Image 1 (cartoon, one colour):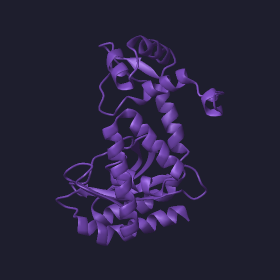
Image 2 (cartoon, rainbow, N blue to C red; image 1 turned 180 degrees about the vertical axis):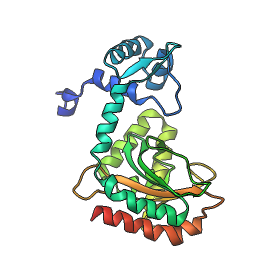
Image 3 (spheres, rainbow, N blue to C red; image 1 turned 120 degrees about the horizontal axis):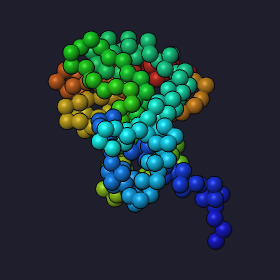
Image 4 (cartoon, rainbow, N blue to C red; image 1 turned 60 degrees about the vertical axis):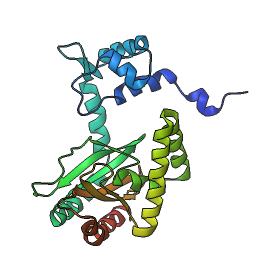
Length: 252
């Protein structure tokens, strides 16, 4: 059978190298070749060649213990991407106004595979506001940000997400399907997505997904905080209409 166009243009070695870079997390102090191999599900010998090449190019560096950390070249890529998100300049004053009004943290995020990544954050002066920073990752299935994205994603996107989850693990796939079902239910009932103690037991949040004016990548905006100070009722009654209004302004 003749290979499909997608298969013929897909460069496996490049994809694996990018997976090596993507496996690093904010909390990582450094990863060995073995740890990277386990995360990426690749042979250690293959990872060793990738890390050597990426180090030569500046995308990785080695610390004093011989473990790998992200290098300055990745910072260049990230800063270029963020500078290209003009919607942040439009969103920031609206996000800060909502954060100050609600005493919460308001964040803007984009999807990366099965996660949502913060690209901007505004927080109130409240001592209990969330401390997550730009670059933080949230689960697609359990977070309000992720569910908001799932609720507005195209059928093709949802299929790609569910297929990716199934490739990883059947439990992850079922969790993603449950998240999608919840997202569609909340979108119909509230016009937004919710997560009350599901992403983290003590965190409540609501979120809306939108397509930035002028096109580009679909995004989600959320508002959340500790359940002890931000109740489900407060988020739905007071915050939700304002959050929906911000998303509409950014979209229209």
